[in-house]
Image 1 (cartoon, rainbow, N blue to C red):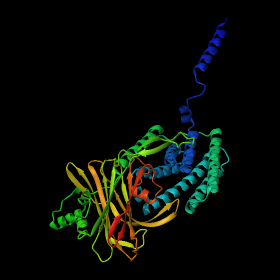
Image 2 (cartoon, rainbow, N blue to C red; image 1 turned 180 degrees about the horizontal axis):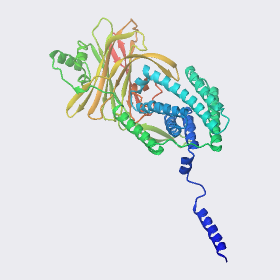
Image 3 (cartoon, one colour; image 1 turned 135 degrees about the horizontal axis):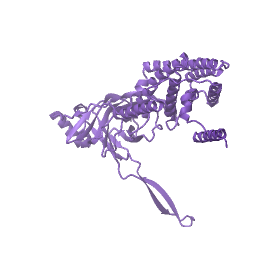
Image 4 (cartoon, rainbow, N blue to C red; image 1 turned 90 degrees about the vertical axis):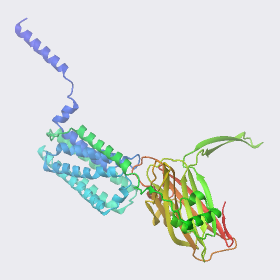
Length: 520
């Protein structure tokens, strides 16, 4: 065999070995670094889709837009030097991210409702919507330039339709409830627009259009990780420092006054519960001077879910049923003691001082905010009127010392609630908002108010005094967004979920000329 033939065989063998040693296709990261157009545009379009169409369950209405915001940011970061319009898109993405992500952290605090209700957040929301419209416009113009460079038809109607869709969405948001047909139509239109934009991106890629990704100091994975880490740290700080009210706890000072001690002795003789009397301020004790009568009612309430007990009851003879199976809930612990006290005051017209007192006999864990809603006697029964007195305070014991604080808020509010039975109603009730410390024992408090006879409504059987306390306890550590107990309560009686536990108690008694009598 000649030397030339041997060289040809050796060369062919070398080529074959080299071909077998290489993979069939280059790695994906290599492809993206050479032609990053497709990856960047896919991120942008998917990010827009995640931000526009969300689902109001499993927190997807927050998770999907957050992921979408990151994808849009990463996509335009790679394209920012391709043309001036993509550069503007990236700048807008950064501004919108600086607006969006802090709001996600703010939702872990109880103060987001105050911020969202302010005028400046309304201005920022409008600016954010305008920036999003400008971003769509810049995307449309940027795509036109890309298609011109790729020698393709520069028209990109999908970009115009995206701006139109955004405008219609904003108008529908101002209208309110638009019905399922329009909603489904808008979703279908958006899907068609995004699919068309994907098609335009693919056409540019298939035409051989290539870009050089803008240089960055942090790769995409590192930037996404830093954003996620900042959100996590912000959320932890929000839950730790922003989930409860700032209370003014001070050491309780016992007032030594012979006049007050005489009034206390008189109230005890009338049957006033001593543990409630010891928690009253000097002012509230003085309000009970020369009391005529005291009526009280004590009830222990469970705040836990209890345990289910199953019992079997034999069936009646001849019924064909051997036994009945009954399931009922048993509460081994009842953590909340609620005491209602009514003090009849000396006055020309019928006047009573109503006191609602609560005492946690066991610490259930205080994770955020608590709320008390009172339905006063004059709320639903004609004849009673507001006596003009409203007071109360909170107390707890720690290390043999009693601490006290005023409520974070205590007052009468008119609000609108929505009930599945009675629809929208406007009511005026007494509300108290507060937070209790996890440390200490005997966490307790009370609210007192007075009622007086507004008109003579006495009948032979007497007339009823109906006073209700609704205690809403926050029994879960984490909730998102972090609503307060009073916000949850105002939305309606059926709005409480597993994050809150509602305890209701009533002080009800009939009033006769000879005195008042508790309803058992």
